[in-house]
Image 1 (tube, rainbow, N blue to C red):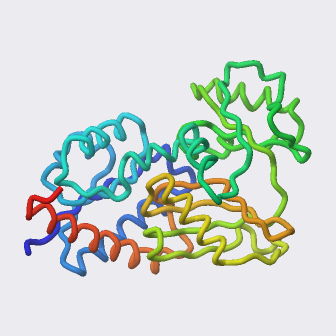
Image 2: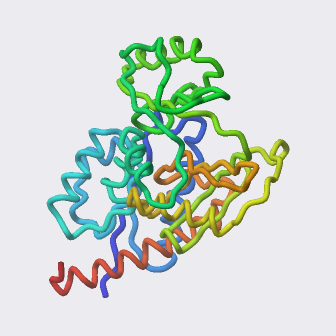
Length: 288
């Protein structure tokens, strides 16, 4: 069988706040692992990708998140079966919070915070009425996950919301998500598959209360969320409450995997190589 041809596209620098190097390093490490198992790889910046012709590749591994580039990838996804995408552009678009919230809220068996999607220019004087937030609210920009440290902000009192929303509006953010603060241990997790590989750690191990929980439940929640959004390479955040309840609060495409980069690169490359080989075999036989 001819070598699988894989195109990797880096994330926009604006969408990698404080993670520019880490985001680039995980993708480079994955492509290096793919080269070791016989996959031919090319790495492009988002700007180089704009002028590239991706149709000559069998697999496209794109970390980019800006809507114009996602729109181009979505058009490719809709018009060709010759390319295997990891992650599929539809799933990346699903990680825009205005899309994530309804998908995860409707995910059976998954604990997801009560959420309200609002317009930034709507009446900021009235807090969400559909749920209580005795410990304050989290206000999160409604599209891409993070471009700076004030895209996700806690308002301990709703009186603080006006300033937060004014900042959102000044940056042309049109929608935001309001969620109640949930007390407990904040956990970061990473996954591939889902079902191929999974790992986790505390965001701040020095402050974590180490509340007991079932690891299988955490892995199952992460997998359920990833399936709901269509993600294959993913990361996210969860809260473990005092009673052991696990609440999934965020899910994203192609995180940096910074603390587990070496192991993650091997697992992601294995997944891409397997998926790419199956796709090429299927395409060569003219199967749908």
